[in-house]
Image 1 (tube, rainbow, N blue to C red):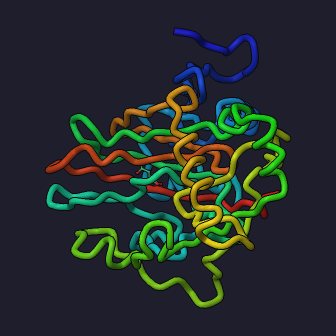
Image 2 (image 1 turned 180 degrees about the vertical axis):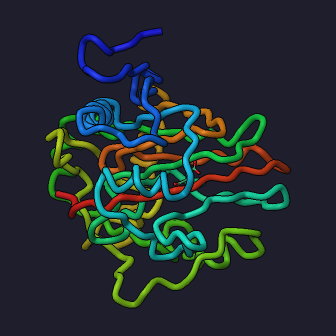
Length: 291
Ligand code: SIN
């Protein structure tokens, strides 16, 4: 196993997950107060690996919220009701009778609002015996792999993202998509939250300064273009970001906690565990306006 302790981080070990991205943090118990210098290393490792995870964490909802607040203010999902008694937490539950799961498209969280979530923290409570992994894709690598010509072409393009009724996917209402689901029950967003956004398709990460592709299942086209004009390019890019060399795959266990950086990572929740239950708690952290 490769560890990076003595080269980069003073207080913890990191075992890289894949060539593209991801790293397991070793030596941190999140149920105990995380000291400032340890959090500094966790944050550094997160910027370096874009997605980090911890195994065997025994966290109550309050403990998860406490850890989440270290990353910034809590961001709430405009379409999804929160956990009873814990308005910061979104429970993602798929029961054995459910056909659909939440997040089963390549996306970056809430790119359809003006200031999308910068980080997502996901805590696994119950996981299928096999299946229910999450795939991640590194958007720095996806950007770097584009030709010079396409980079130039996209440099000043903004995309339109929508939280519901995406035209590219047939305009279906979220509520119809999850009709009959035992747990996922989308609601209408509060009127003050606009769920259509325009963001640059090439985003500069505010902390690392690196450029990455910023696209999502929420993207329906280039802003200011006719729908049909940009559709082929959106479809091409959504295919491009799945290249195996950009990706990593996290196999969950009860007690795994992952934190990913939505500013440079897309993710996809696999729906390959029919008849089994999967139960997760999720918190997202407020981000800034993509530039
Ligand atoms: C999501 O945030 O899209 C869900 C990820 C997962 O459940 O693996």
